[in-house]
Amino acid sequence: MGLGMVRPMTHFDVAIVGGGIVGSSTAYYLRKNGFTGSIGLFEQDMSFKRACTSLSWGGIRQQFSTPENIRLSQFGLALIRNLKDEFGPEADIGFKEQGYLVLATEGSVAVLEENQKLQRSMGADTEIYWGADMARRFPWINFDGIAAASFGPRNEGWFDPYSLMSIVRKAALARDVTLVQQAVAGIGRNGKITSLSTAGGETFTVGALVNAAGASAGAVAGFAGIELPVSPAKRFVYVIDCPGASEAMRKGPLTFDVTGEYFRPEGRNFIWGFTPSDDEEPKVKDWEMDESWFENRIWPALASRVPAFEAVKMIGGWIGHYDYNWFDHNGIIGRHPDIENFYFANGFSGHGIQQGPATGNAIAELICFGGYRTIDLARLGYERLQRKEPLFEKNIF
Image (cartoon, rainbow, N blue to C red; front, side):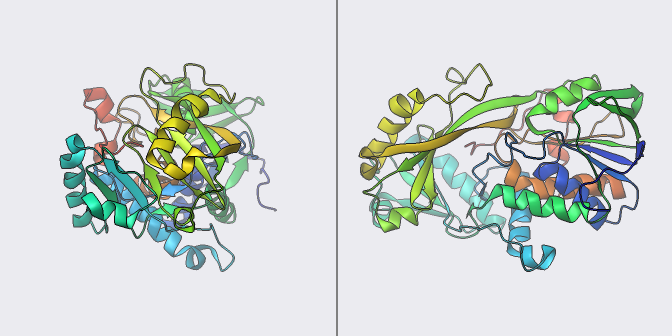
């Protein structure tokens, strides 16, 4: 039977809702951890044109303030480093190890130093630059108003997210995972999850259900009567031609300014984005581009920060939807405390591509062994929502 074909099955021991990086990784690591039961991977749109994974920036970093987030990304980095050994000699995602640069004002230097101490204790190579050293290291940036800059010179950068997702999904399907190309429209529950139904009118009984539905995760949880504060957050990405950019700029890091704008090289061009404030957050979660953010907000700010950006031309762009956790912006991972066969892998708020492989492995360990073996993610569990105890990340981009 060819990859991706649906077998005539009416039961799955594990049903995974969502075929992006998180869902595909869950399926792959279930098999790698020795699971021999039937696995169904439910994905309604195999083009992934509007998936969180394929529309992401493809970044990976260790500059977090939460140990679990650092470990999750380190797992993803190890997979990238060993991609050909894991998936074969043709596996390639174009990893650009050009680093992340995080700027800080005087008021946030203490947080920057605290984060660096944690990162370095966990094996990261984070460096902090001060004063004139910043300008010597990154001469194309205007550091007015900046007290320090944190830089990850190794093990940070970006890659093609669609390629990673495709490689992992293909490997999962090659290990007897069934792809069901339909949208999930309902979930049956009687104490625990008993079944799911699709928009095409099919019903499958299930032994366990994994919610890896990206920006639709809140709606999927709602089918089971579970409240999950995850829904789309609309983000704009602009592709920029900058004729005056130096070669050093084009080989430079992904840079985050203190005012919320960020940029990185993209071939001979650059891509720009920004993190809106609560007041600026787009209320309508559609797929319409808004160029006014480029003209009125991002361009003036980045031209002030990078003089070469004064003369640029927008040549393209796209809209992406984060699977946003509105409670505390961190991933929600693990088994439901009251529904033993419902698993969360949701709400990564822009970190899903780098944390997806580790999350898939973590869910697989819970299903296969009843507990975590590689990374203890208990603090990222659903219980913190029930306790109303947020776990905030101090480096939210």
